[in-house]
Length: 414
Image (cartoon, rainbow, N blue to C red; front, side, top):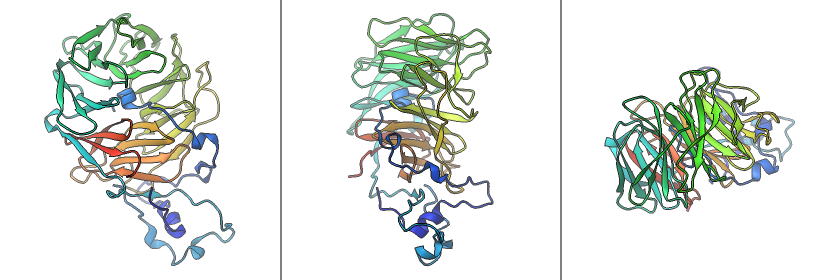
């Protein structure tokens, strides 16, 4: 990561204008203090671990108002070794070189998911999409399966021979769950436990099951199902039944015996072993959640407001109780984190996408990263093309744009 800005620039960078509806700077309590929460590494839990249907910054804007030296700008009572506030580090192609993997403008909006070797892609919501794959190392892409119907979410766990799809049916507007072999594209239907709405999120969990969140229309309808990852498992069972109905379903993740998922902009939690009840996953409920990911300590939520939140996992009861969540990143200026999308976590970091504003500039878009627990926010990929989908492989972060590009950027700067 580039060196931190001088103290007077750091302070100026995180101050937002009173006009323009900009959000305030992060609380100092959110600055990492070296506890286990801020230093622990994480495992995949987002879109490609989850395949969610999910997407530069203004740099050090505002620094021109800083004084000529750090001492004159620092509070008079601030100790000389006081921690610096978080800063925004704009994109630097020399530090985070982006590589083009594919250009597929005819297949937008792209839905992507990675395993250890390839990034799989299809067209989200298409009535007859092509499923294909492109090597993460670079090279020509190859088709896997044609005629994929209404795919909305995809998971391609490393070590598995299958692509898992949460989808729908054009003719009936019902849901459909399929797995397709990565090698030859053979489709296999997963039988639901009853009538289901369109699949909107999917996650291949470490417990050996695949979890799917569903769109719910009527009360008493199924909202979550799971089925075995093993080749012989072709029947899903109910995890959650909606009592109220009218739920959108959305991105989801699984950790610690609990399923966390987004529906109607809220974040919910229930036990992986099923039941009709659910609980609010956040102490302060929200209605603008977009993406969700988890590791073995926390779950992370991206919000359309331009914020990233973190909360410790629920207890085994999956009741949503415990220490309140924290905001670990927020809009710093008028143009940061516009139209936020997917979120993933790996190696002690949280990374998220933002489509940005209108073409061709897509201001506020790109791929951004911050340490678990909060801290400096670094833009690791540019706004170019409008970033709309995000996942990660063993050594790279992979993203797709609204212009049809599939691109990667190293997790660790070269």
